[in-house]
Length: 214
Image (cartoon, rainbow, N blue to C red; front, side, top):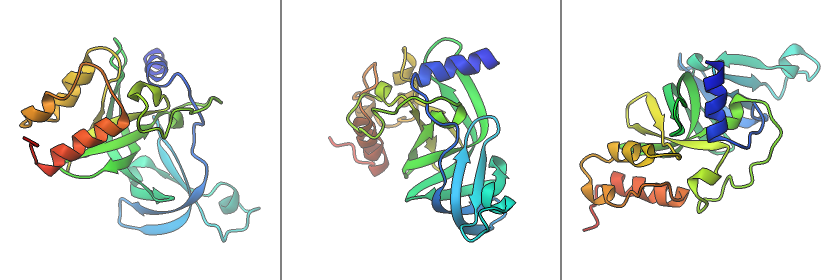
């Protein structure tokens, strides 16, 4: 299992960053309905968690140094610096390479587009320690393969599981078109290889709009 995990990470993210996000101001909502604000940091992987620090706490106290940790299963959603993250009970990651499929439970993903088909962004750098850069992240016109520290997920509205869009091999078109059922006009636009983030966004927007464009 460890080997497959490393293989998947290598396939998805040749450049890896921090294992845990830096603390930043935000708001959160727990599974039991509790809401709060604070300095937030999150981590994905087999032990996904959200850590909350009270900015008013004594920096020398335990609460000020480490904050309060919530297991992924205890968190419903949170927002950090305008980015909204939701809990996914199941995340299926598949780079498209042989033997590189894996599933994670109770992980967080950033919600990019809402609608009957939702596009989410999953940060792979939150799962391993390393010190490399993220040169292409944030460039919407760069090829999807170039966004090396993140992968994109799709889920149907109302579901709590999501699947990644493979960027290697022949699975890209197969997976993406499986979410575009009923829209042959859009399926025709999906090529055999990934294009850019902007093209993907436009495709999802067109699907959610219900307009065939014909």
